[in-house]
Length: 316
Image 1 (tube, rainbow, N blue to C red):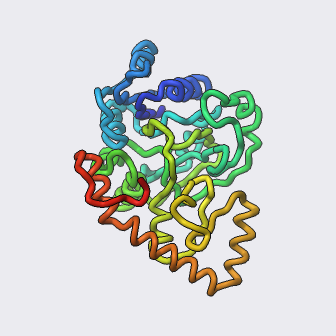
Image 2: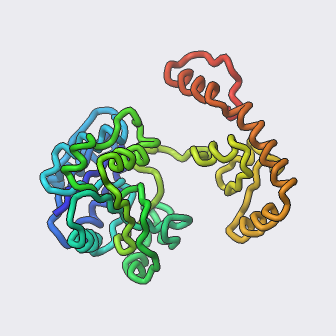
Image 3: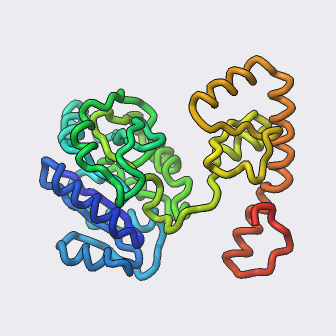
């Protein structure tokens, strides 16, 4: 029915859990294709021993290249791209088949609703990682977790017709290791005529969170969205768990500890325009001084080429 394309990079325990969920919780006889990056943790042997179709690279070739390489082996009409840090809930492929039966063309992009401990489309705690994942809990509750179909999806797991995938060339490999590749893929689909970017409420996966090709916890968290907001002088509310309060004070960025805390602070600053604007301006000035594109690009080049830095980077 579906060709499931999955990149993995020394992520054996999550890979095993994801594959087992597909084996247990799929209705159709789907095709699984895994691209193994390195595979020195036992994942490559696991894939071979279980006779899973695969492609392989001795080094991590990046998410975009890994997916494109594996997708070339697809033999069905549909390519489903997924991360390896996801648990597929029962009946996921029936939901997709039922949705496809409603469509009269191949111009679509269908994706799942993610269940996560702290965020996602559905917030529901079934564990932080593979060690404490509560499979029994998710299986007993996933049907009752409320969500709605939505238009505007741009994340995995997502289903694209193979004919369309081939026309747009899959992921743009200049986006390796993968940051920014999702919106780029959607733009290529849009230019090809796709207008259905639909998230399906009953296609559910439990997501452990952005560890498919990331190998160790990062000290801090940021994103292009945070950069855009602070850099454009817009008051920005940031979860204290990002640890960005090491770089910014409460006079530059508003940090919150909980949803209730966030709600109270948003209501306060909504009513106090002058205070809001002053804090936003101070945040913008610091961001442009220490995190501008010249310094970020310099840092990347210095690290990649092992150059001696001419800057003292603010975050080191």
